[in-house]
Length: 131
Image 1 (cartoon, rainbow, N blue to C red):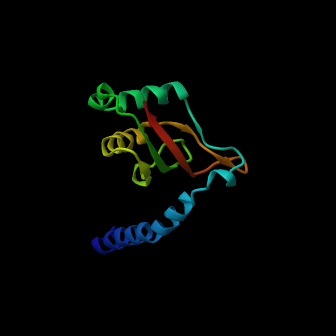
Image 2 (spheres, helix red, strand yellow; image 1 turned 180 degrees about the vertical axis):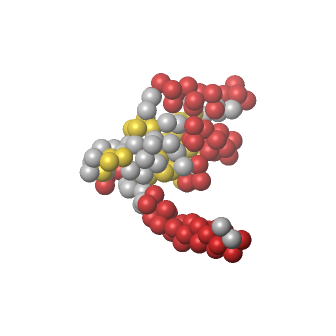
Image 3 (cartoon, rainbow, N blue to C red; image 1 turned 90 degrees about the vertical axis):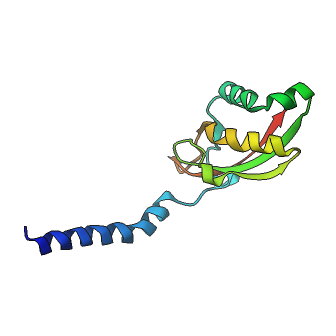
């Protein structure tokens, strides 16, 4: 294979990869709201989630008896994982609790929602209560 042929093959491969980026993003699909799903998104394990949240509770706040709620919204992908870049804090009673919730949410595992028998991306709103 000549240098020119090899170079053109690399350029063609690169161009194909670049051109397919929007298609890959489309393939990922839109995220569905819970009412749009046939099977809603659920926690994979309430017990494991409870342990994660308990560990995320800032020790100083817990000792001081500071309680509060952080309302979080995020996208769960089709494998049940939280997309970390999607985490949004909707409301919170404390800046410290906000940071604790923001850090722990990507660790929570879910059973993905389903649409027409297939696991899909979904939007989840979750109140995290620290008490």
